[in-house]
Length: 139
Image (cartoon, rainbow, N blue to C red; front, top):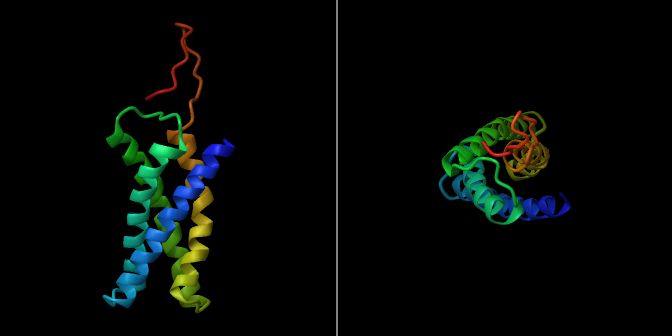
């Protein structure tokens, strides 16, 4: 678990860098609203994190089909993006933080929730008891 957490954290840091770079570029260079830019950056970061997670972070992959696996990974990300945008909005509009400072706060909040859910749903081998005596962990 410690190795997976470390490797996922490295991937999350890389994904965060991509996320913030996209956010900053869209807001500053293209004058896109910070919430639309934050959503786009989050999606880009999620794609980077997925590739990193399946290649380097997790040794067990519960879902054999990569399309289904990415669908679950993205569904968790959808919950994360909603939390992320809500925190950014509140921090910018209510507390008057700069959008990049708000992004840091939002990313911190979503990191642990996303890691826990993704690991439990996709990268943990659960033992099931069946009549044949053969535990099955893959979907």
